Picture 1 (cartoon, helix red, strand yellow):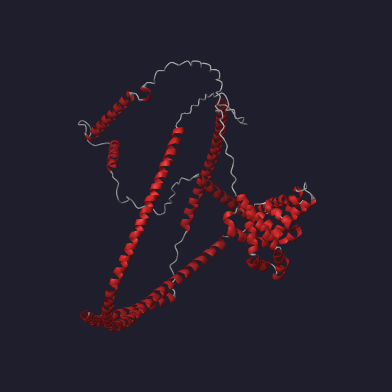
Picture 2: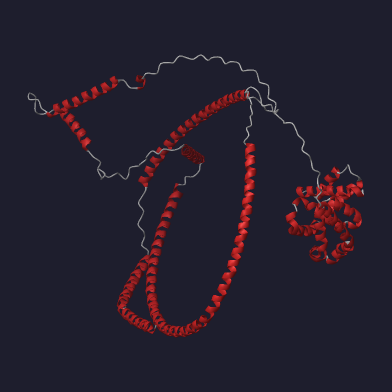
Length: 625
């Protein structure tokens, strides 16, 4: 069994990968794994299951080491190797005393030697530093030191020998063995054998051509000339009859009675009205005042949704009316008296609400007048404070200008002292610049020589690559002749399930197209039938809607005649008192405006005095500068 520990460790790695990928329960996973491992020996099976279950139970402890290891060495490692590092860490920490160093070394050497060497050196190097601290944060410090740290330190000398053996194995594996030189062996050309030619296709039968039919004459698409001529003759005859009638009406017969009969008068008045109606144009003003009592009901075009919605509304109203009539027949009471009392109470509440609105309106106007008065007093106060601030700022500006002049004088003296010190430093700067220029010239010459050498090497390499490319293009330019005949009655010969020839595919497509057309025709007929039924339903709904609208219009006209005008708003005593108070506030505001108009003269004089003071201060500053 000692020789097979490497294969058992690989089997445990596979099972651990399955568990981490499946994310299932541990007990169920162990039962399934034991069923899969029934072929193995009992000891081998127990070793694999113990290792996998131990790795899963101590996952938090092992992830502390593995996560940091991947964070430092993760660039040269893959995520698929994580399970083998977990198992090696578990065996070294928990099972090293049970399996022994010899079996542990066999497991290490059966895996990737270089990766195992890096992991073990990382593990034993950081064991007593941060790994012990992280484990102490999870378990008790005394328990960690007694159960895990001391046993691992006891195995440290044997682990160093194992690591040296792994280093020797890695160095032997990296030595490159020279492979024997293989001689070239000639091979025959693998030329494709041509296919046997299929039998020639039969000559198609000639399709009999039909005789060309005569084109449709153009006269079928044009109206006959006789109809146009008859229309012109009718127009001329109508015009002549109108002219004759006009002459007969305008001219009187000499032998007839000059007084016209009633029939002729009626005919003449009718003709005159017709002529006047032709001369009437669109006027700006309406010819008569429209009546206000007329009930206007203009027809509106409804869509299908509106018709169905209106029909459902009228049906619901009809059911409610029938229920009301049934209740009256059974002996219910008519609520007309209650409704009349309710109407009177509503009118009384409306009168009180109107009075309340008027009071609120007057109170709002009074508060507006009081706010305007307070605003004027606030403006006067602000003007006074602004005047005081202007005088204070003018005083501050004068003191600031004097201080500024004194500072400028001190700065001039300081600048003269600094300029004398700069004259001595200019000579030293010039010497330093000359030395730096000489160094820069030497470095530039060396760089130019290196660039020229690199350019010559790159040009030589580029010429060699061009030669190779030219040879490859010459080889690829050789012609390749491939002849392939195509038969549309045969399949491609790939031995697939649905393989067919081109002719068979066209026939199947034609049958499928016919089936689709029949299905589409049946759908059209079904849709047309549903549309006719829906149209008939909408027509029935429109008739019921028109009937209900006529009945509702008559009921509205009757209610309008019975309606009485609203009584005028009752004047309340509080409203009159508020109106009187509003007049008093208006008079007080006018008095404030008159007193305010007298004060601008005094404010203008004060502003002129402050302006003269600021001008004098600015002139004195410019003279000092």
